Image (cartoon, rainbow, N blue to C red):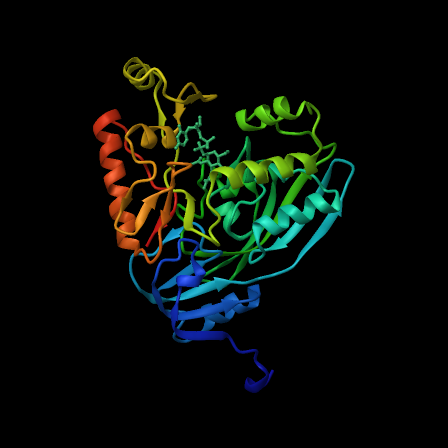
Length: 346
Ligand code: EPU
């Protein structure tokens, strides 16, 4: 291939990232490269300057808080495409490019008659970001529907395919937030939707819908509609109010710690876990400290769900972090529990 026929990278210098993060926070990337294929990622790796510069991987930007400009090469993953890869007696296997919208993928699969992702409806962000933090909602996590993914190593440029065990999924966690953080670009994700379909209805909000509607055997499209309605009622739409979903993880404590806290606050919302530990509702803890609807500068706590921090208009990442620290301190002061942020703070 002659040099002139080598496809060029789509590069923007001094790119504003405000429209590329769901919080709408201002930050300038020294270099923004839009990658449309695994080959584009390899071109970055092989590039004489970009390949050796600090790099930052950006998906839909729905789980990141920018507190500064990035003197780095930001790889904006825009790898598109989605298809039914295989249909077997026991599953539909769906394949999607990492740059696809997660919410659109879920809506499309349900509309096509391939149920199984409906509980994960309307979660903002890209398909490639879904495994990074093992997104979850209404009793289902990405790992429950995961088949495999392809990723390109940012050092060697080599493509690898990882299965669920290698991704080491945990609660809002995976190998991509641990030792592969910033080192590996997810390019394609495959999902396994089991046949026959079985609804996941254990979550309190869905049980409530069954009672209210008298529909005890909802189909996937109905569950999809319910989840969309529940989310719209509780969570701000990032297109309207900047936010990154839940700002903190729900903390997990020992049964002794939980007994101690319940002794002082009998109302505390908590869920026993399979391993004997107890998960506490961080939203409840923050709400109990009186934070709902409060603001620090132009960053605030959403008035319908205290776990969500919002940009009230023109907030900086520093303001969001100041608010988050103040919340952490008050929850620690009252309950002795350290809340851990869910998004990546840059
Ligand atoms: N609560 C309050 N006050 C609040 C918020 C919550 O008292 O301001 C109470 C609720 O009444 C409820 C409990 O806390 O009894 C839990 O609240 P909710 O059902 O809204 O869920 P969550 O634990 O706050 C988690 C996920 C969400 C996910 C929902 C539904 C985390 C960190 N968050 O929130 O995920 O949509 O469950 O499954 O695990 C995200 O990760 O970005 C996210 C939105």
